[in-house]
Every structure is written in structure tokens, then in C-alpha cells.
Length: 73
Image 1 (tube, rainbow, N blue to C red):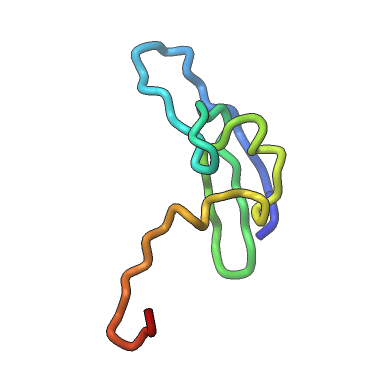
Image 2 (cartoon, one colour; image 1 turned 30 degrees about the vertical axis):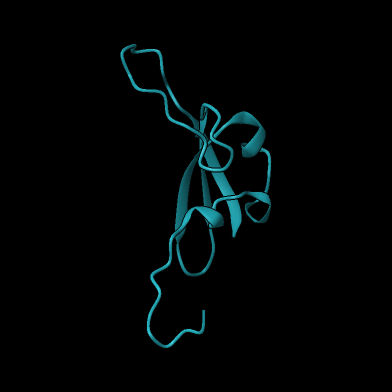
């Protein structure tokens, strides 16, 4: 996936719950968009993680895939 854009998260209104980075769990400051031929992914990231490419992020480990009876565990 390629990084195609980002926008800053606006916390200036006050009273909002802070969003955590979906890679490292720090406070997110940007919403970063990644795209490829199959779809588009928008994730909330901190400044440090927003600089990284998709393959460097730890977002894949956060998914819990269902186990079917066909898989060997």
C-alpha cells in the first residue's frame, strides 16, 4: 500500500476524547491514508508513525482473524 495523503486531527474544540495511534498507542495527531489497487485504508497515527510506510507499521498485529475448522493450529 502506498501513502496517498494525511490530515491533522483537530483537538481544539475541547472536551473530545484523545485518539490513540493505531500502531504504537501514543496520542494520534494525524489521519493517514494508504491506497492500493484493492482498497483504501485510513488510520490514526502519531507524528512518528505517520512518517513510516505501511509495511513498517504494526497495524497488522491488531487484527484477530477467526479460526475455521480447516486450519492447522
